[in-house]
Image 1 (cartoon, rainbow, N blue to C red):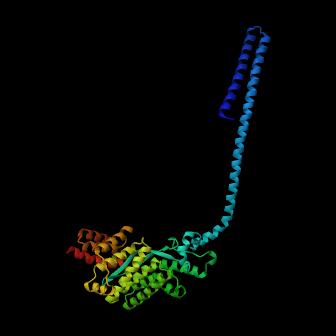
Image 2: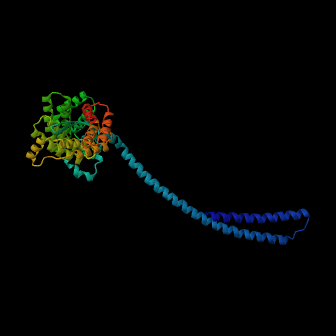
Image 3: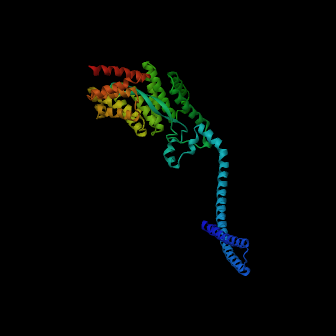
Amino acid sequence: MSHSENKGLILGIMAGAAGISLVLVWYHKIRRSGATVNLPAFLDLRNRFHYVDLQNETHNEQGTVMALQGRQLQILEKLNGLLLSMEELKREVKFLKEAVPKLEELVRDELQGKAGVRRISPLHKATRKRRAETAYGATETTSSEEADSEGGYITAHSDTEGESEEERGQISLPAASARTEKETELFNLLQQVDSLRCGSDDDKKESFRLLLEKEEKYGNHERFLWRLARAYGDMFEMTTDVEEKKKYVANGKIVSEKAIQLDTMSADSHQWFAIMCGYMSEFDSIQNKIKNGSLFKEHLDKAIELKPQDPFLYYLHGRWCYSVAQLSWIEKKVAATLFGTPPTSTVQEALQNFLKAEEMHPGYSKYNYVYLAKCYKDLGQRSNALKYCDFASSVLPVTNEDKEAQKDLEALLLTLQL
């Protein structure tokens, strides 16, 4: 019943009640005063009131019935909507009952790093087909790096933190039914060596030992091989014996080159092959240094193309540009003889790469500050050179790279103070 219909019914009842009340009051008043009453007139008046009340009651009853019918329709509609909602709720509950038993398996797979198979979009299958051979892996983002220049070309070493290749969307995992014990073991091994490499020198040696033990078993997996190349780089840095250094870098170059052959789109494989070429320049003749320098630049450019978010790669590129800008006359002549056109770069190009690394990762490394200062010094901007010397001085020398950077910083400050 609507609000207006309720109001009409109430007013009708009040009017009828008020009329009867007035008659009763008048009747009692006459009786108290002893006056006579014309009964037929009174009865006629009563009949009129009764007729009016009957009409009002009939009209109100009809309105009430219609209102109740409308209300019933509204209630039926709401009940129908409620029944539909209940049916939908039943379907959802049924779905949840079917899904909950699978939750345990899903959580277990997530903890084992295997749940990525369920998240692979069909749009990615074509581009990831080449990765079907290797089941698991993790990649790295680099932090502070160590690099030494001899004869104009650089060597470099990376201290890295592991980042899942699955999280970067660069890994295709086999279906649960196709997973093998070998794939699971490889995944666990790569996680272990990544974790060890973040530790002490002894931890890095243990990581290297584990990789060597499994080389025969996993030597055809690109993600295993670039980690082995990285471990050879660690051993190269930790040893002081020249012959051992040569052995480590030669083996590291071989395995990183094999990793590239297995997957030409692996940024880490290109990165570590470039680094091995840089290391080899410490022991090569001028001719071989230039050859390795050319390979270094070629594979570094490819790594930057595949992994443009890594500040370490821009730092390495800056080192290459700075080294080429410092080439001696004879080195340029040898390069021209070997390649027709010698590699060219400028201090300004080196500066832009070092600034890029700093922009992507403020306070990236002590050595990056030192090379920024060197570039500004060479460009005649002494105040900027001193500013970055101050920044470099604020970084405490902790790693081997920091200690080498501290030596270069002290020598640079002497030249700036002259």
